[in-house]
Length: 193
Image (cartoon, rainbow, N blue to C red; front, top):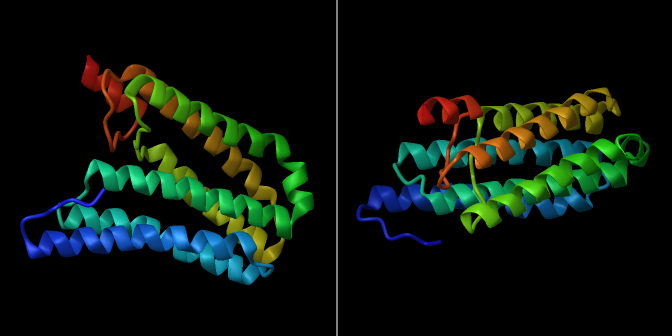
């Protein structure tokens, strides 16, 4: 995972990006365990900021390695599983009413990872536009739930998650070799034709 970069600037950028990703991983523990909706919302906001800026920093310093991108995706999965556990703990009624959609999101995520490992020998890290939009809607829906007890937008967010996972599956199906930072299925189809 650690990469030797020739310049101090690159080493700094790599360390900063990696630190932001690891910070999000560390935030997953208190997020999963908190009994405060306000603290959960604050941890979600901090996680979102680290998720946005780890990639910004890596690209700005020219150190967006495949390893960093894959770690980012794995940490995202852990962080949002912690958020799901937090929903279960703080709003079990909302979790129960969305249990089939939550199960579908988790199942499609697991199917994607299994298919990627089968096809490429490792997990992919596409960071597609739909996945980014899903992340933004999911964080917004969770913030609304944790701060106001309103779970209506969670349905939209979960359906977007399923759609994102379907797109990732189709991207994996369409690609000949594993790539990172694939914008969308349309981009894969256009580049193949």
